[in-house]
Image (tube, rainbow, N blue to C red):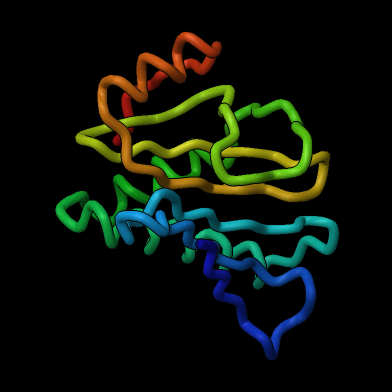
Length: 139
Protein backbone atom coordinates (compact mmCIF):
# COMPACT_ATOMS: atom_id res chain seq x y z
CA UNK A 1 0.00 0.00 0.00
CA UNK A 2 1.41 3.41 -0.95
CA UNK A 3 0.63 6.77 0.57
CA UNK A 4 1.69 9.99 -1.14
CA UNK A 5 1.92 13.27 0.71
CA UNK A 6 2.28 16.47 -1.27
CA UNK A 7 1.67 20.16 -0.97
CA UNK A 8 -1.55 20.37 -2.98
CA UNK A 9 -1.42 24.15 -3.09
CA UNK A 10 2.08 24.20 -4.59
CA UNK A 11 3.31 23.91 -8.16
CA UNK A 12 3.52 20.59 -9.99
CA UNK A 13 7.27 20.39 -9.47
CA UNK A 14 7.08 20.52 -5.67
CA UNK A 15 8.64 17.54 -3.84
CA UNK A 16 6.47 14.69 -2.55
CA UNK A 17 6.97 12.03 0.05
CA UNK A 18 5.78 8.47 -0.57
CA UNK A 19 5.42 5.86 2.15
CA UNK A 20 5.14 2.19 1.15
CA UNK A 21 3.56 -0.05 3.78
CA UNK A 22 3.26 -3.83 3.79
CA UNK A 23 -0.38 -4.86 3.68
CA UNK A 24 0.39 -8.03 5.68
CA UNK A 25 2.40 -6.55 8.54
CA UNK A 26 1.45 -2.88 8.40
CA UNK A 27 5.15 -1.99 8.63
CA UNK A 28 6.80 0.74 6.63
CA UNK A 29 8.87 -0.78 3.82
CA UNK A 30 10.16 2.45 2.31
CA UNK A 31 10.02 6.21 2.58
CA UNK A 32 10.81 7.89 -0.74
CA UNK A 33 11.15 11.63 -1.20
CA UNK A 34 10.94 12.64 -4.84
CA UNK A 35 11.87 15.85 -6.57
CA UNK A 36 11.47 16.72 -10.23
CA UNK A 37 14.23 19.19 -11.01
CA UNK A 38 12.85 20.03 -14.46
CA UNK A 39 11.83 23.37 -13.02
CA UNK A 40 14.63 23.76 -10.47
CA UNK A 41 14.09 26.55 -7.97
CA UNK A 42 15.93 27.17 -4.73
CA UNK A 43 12.64 27.11 -2.79
CA UNK A 44 11.57 23.69 -4.07
CA UNK A 45 15.02 22.16 -3.65
CA UNK A 46 15.15 23.46 -0.07
CA UNK A 47 11.81 21.73 0.57
CA UNK A 48 13.18 18.50 -0.94
CA UNK A 49 16.20 18.77 1.35
CA UNK A 50 13.94 19.33 4.38
CA UNK A 51 11.78 16.32 3.53
CA UNK A 52 14.91 14.17 3.17
CA UNK A 53 16.20 15.44 6.50
CA UNK A 54 13.02 14.78 8.47
CA UNK A 55 12.32 11.41 6.85
CA UNK A 56 15.69 10.24 8.16
CA UNK A 57 15.67 12.24 11.42
CA UNK A 58 12.39 10.57 12.41
CA UNK A 59 14.17 7.20 12.31
CA UNK A 60 17.53 8.29 13.74
CA UNK A 61 16.81 11.21 16.13
CA UNK A 62 20.10 10.70 17.99
CA UNK A 63 22.21 11.83 15.03
CA UNK A 64 23.35 15.45 15.16
CA UNK A 65 21.51 17.71 12.71
CA UNK A 66 24.69 18.99 11.06
CA UNK A 67 26.01 15.46 10.56
CA UNK A 68 22.70 14.32 9.11
CA UNK A 69 22.52 17.32 6.75
CA UNK A 70 26.04 16.63 5.51
CA UNK A 71 25.18 12.97 4.89
CA UNK A 72 22.01 13.89 2.96
CA UNK A 73 24.01 16.29 0.80
CA UNK A 74 26.51 13.49 0.09
CA UNK A 75 23.72 11.09 -0.92
CA UNK A 76 21.88 13.61 -3.09
CA UNK A 77 25.07 14.74 -4.82
CA UNK A 78 26.33 11.22 -5.50
CA UNK A 79 26.87 10.23 -9.09
CA UNK A 80 23.95 7.89 -9.71
CA UNK A 81 23.30 6.72 -13.26
CA UNK A 82 19.78 7.53 -14.45
CA UNK A 83 17.46 4.54 -14.44
CA UNK A 84 14.06 3.55 -15.64
CA UNK A 85 10.82 4.62 -13.99
CA UNK A 86 11.02 4.49 -10.21
CA UNK A 87 9.13 1.77 -8.38
CA UNK A 88 9.30 0.38 -4.88
CA UNK A 89 11.75 -2.50 -4.64
CA UNK A 90 14.26 -1.44 -7.30
CA UNK A 91 17.88 -2.53 -6.91
CA UNK A 92 19.94 0.59 -6.18
CA UNK A 93 23.47 1.11 -7.51
CA UNK A 94 24.63 2.21 -4.03
CA UNK A 95 23.12 1.77 -0.56
CA UNK A 96 24.27 3.62 2.55
CA UNK A 97 23.45 1.71 5.73
CA UNK A 98 23.79 2.03 9.47
CA UNK A 99 22.04 0.23 12.34
CA UNK A 100 19.20 -1.24 10.31
CA UNK A 101 18.49 1.86 8.23
CA UNK A 102 19.37 1.95 4.54
CA UNK A 103 19.43 5.04 2.33
CA UNK A 104 19.88 5.19 -1.41
CA UNK A 105 19.59 7.81 -4.12
CA UNK A 106 17.82 7.12 -7.37
CA UNK A 107 17.46 9.13 -10.57
CA UNK A 108 14.62 8.52 -12.98
CA UNK A 109 15.88 9.71 -16.33
CA UNK A 110 17.62 13.05 -16.06
CA UNK A 111 15.00 14.96 -14.12
CA UNK A 112 13.52 13.12 -11.14
CA UNK A 113 15.56 12.56 -7.99
CA UNK A 114 14.60 10.17 -5.20
CA UNK A 115 15.95 9.90 -1.67
CA UNK A 116 14.86 6.50 -0.38
CA UNK A 117 14.96 5.18 3.19
CA UNK A 118 14.41 1.47 3.87
CA UNK A 119 14.83 -0.92 6.77
CA UNK A 120 17.71 -3.34 6.15
CA UNK A 121 19.20 -6.42 7.77
CA UNK A 122 22.28 -8.50 6.93
CA UNK A 123 20.38 -10.86 4.60
CA UNK A 124 18.99 -7.94 2.58
CA UNK A 125 22.41 -6.30 2.40
CA UNK A 126 23.93 -9.52 1.07
CA UNK A 127 21.14 -9.87 -1.53
CA UNK A 128 21.64 -6.28 -2.69
CA UNK A 129 25.39 -6.81 -2.88
CA UNK A 130 24.93 -10.01 -4.90
CA UNK A 131 22.87 -7.98 -7.40
CA UNK A 132 25.67 -5.43 -7.79
CA UNK A 133 24.73 -2.80 -5.21
CA UNK A 134 27.68 -1.05 -3.59
CA UNK A 135 27.17 -1.11 0.21
CA UNK A 136 28.53 1.95 2.05
CA UNK A 137 28.54 2.96 5.71
CA UNK A 138 26.22 5.86 6.50
CA UNK A 139 26.51 8.76 8.92
